[in-house]
Length: 272
Image (cartoon, rainbow, N blue to C red; front, side):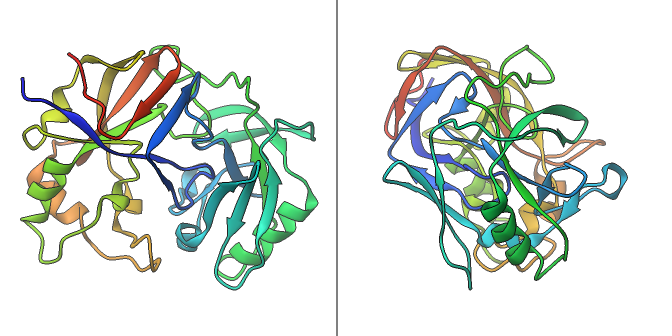
């Protein structure tokens, strides 16, 4: 087995908004600290994302990718083009409880107040007019993964998505223009193995935390949205169809669950 190490780490505090690159990540019961712990919902308390699903009532707003959360001074600081910064406390404060939906999963979220609602309604309303609110998963959230009984915040399926530098490099060889890793919104990016090695990952350990591979990640149209401009195209889905696919979907990356809490760092080695 070659030496596989962590190349980069990422958390995405607000579901479907821009991520934050980390040198080290605190891992708790729901995954990397603050990852998808906040989520925008519409007036029906259904999640809002860069891509929608009419059958489930989910609204798609591509310019969510331009919303940039940051963490500073004990606050979540949210910026977007043409908007004044929005400041939210990191503390798990009380607020109105709302039952909110992510795909077919219903869980409780804490409403983040009228100021946040006005901010998101103003910004997102430029693309899709509506009344939007921001909710937060409580620190003691109880949303379970589809398989394995693990805890997850507002991520679609599982607390971790792992991809590799080598798989992206191999995929980019098929495309006219290379794409960055941010198209795939991974939490953990590894390096040192062969392309698509992650597809077969089972159990491994990083520091004090045990990880277990669950399934490949079927990719959606969010991957076709340039995360710096909100413009969309046909790649990488067109190339993934010839690179890593079956009759059901195209794939890039692997979902993980974990046991234990602690800190993982860029450069840490995966122990099998």
